Image 1 (cartoon, rainbow over the protein chains, first blue to last red):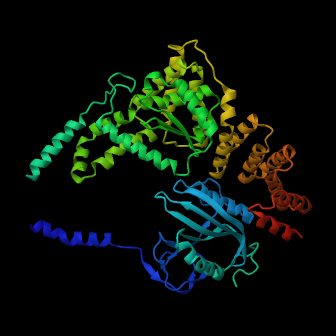
Image 2: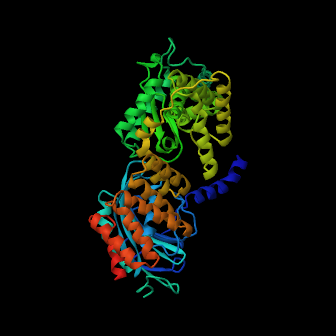
Image 3: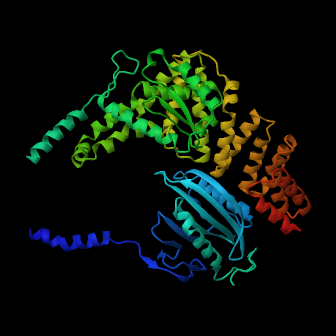
Length: 198
Length: 381
């Protein structure tokens, strides 16, 4: 009995560690992330996850709706396609790689691209795509995906929401986030960046 | 009392765990579905239902008719009324095929696109049909259960028995059986191939192509072929049979009928490979399609896309040549104009680029990527 008691505090600590949850922070207003080199206005009443390498924000839960903003080195291998982003790609070519990444994702089915057109994000030439798909349990999602290449980085802003009810409700909020997006510093000689950094 | 109950359950389970794996085939007189087999069938039917709404089935009635026709030639009469074979195709460029115990066989577009004739298809179908007729799913299930009876006894006490073990037979159907069962499927399968009048010399060729592709692309296919040495072993098994039991045997291969039925699959699968960035396989797929349907603009356009999207400087001229061929074959084919415009624009050849973009918009006024092309034209003004 005494030996068992000795282990109780240890067990308690282990259980506490098991209860650790990702840290969510209330947001609203300007959000600056030096690691990502971005500034955006986030909506009131949403929460974001505290990670410097990717901004993930949601209103009611990740499975209902989420906004994700991040950037990756273009040399980094993509998980579902062997294609790679390359410097000098046109926005349409960039979109091609980005969307093939979803088309080749074995976890998604019924992928349908509804829209794929040029767009300026923070004044930088990129693309805007809208697509729908189902995940393994059959739930339908709809995404709006903005992306652009800047030197050796691929930036994207993605809004992903359950197609029923949630997508329409928060789509406008996401577009406001996109409109507020700007880079903190624009690398010198970056093409297609007339208003970047302002 | 609890301990007593547990002991009875454990004893029963160990006894069940020793259930024989030596079942007669479906074609035997004594055939009857056994209890655990019924569970596996139920899971198979559930899986079939899931697959039918998964968005993966490749819808081509004529192709399915053709594939089912070949399966019919291979099936022995004794299976009638016991197993209803039905062949379906799934949009998936990975090299796989699997048979469910119920008789539903699934072929990936990837494996169909690799074959060269009906005899090779028959080899694959006969192999998969043997898994069904020889009840390999339940055999594998029992084998695993016997080996892990102690584990199962733990699981049954936690109530997860059915869920965990019931899926084993089905999982094996998709991911591959034991070496013994795969060898049996090869050996029994080739008998069906020969009995149906197909050329048995085509059997190892199917595996040779696949082995080559796996080596070239450094693919670790976890499915039909198992590991690389297993493929080699199977090639050797077939070659031994060709030198002994089937020495001097020939038969039909039906290349033309096969390609007439599968050419669209070859094109579609090359597109899937291109999306996955498997440029080498996509290129071979496009070239194969061109060798069958040389006068179809879509094949040349796709080959051009492989070269353009690969992004190697030295491939640019090859892409241009293929797009040109596509336009020569079908002057109203819009996509090649757009791609030529993109290449020309990047090279600074504005006049030429403008000409192609304008032609593209004229041929495809409702193109979903119209916005990009309009922007290119605006930027070149």
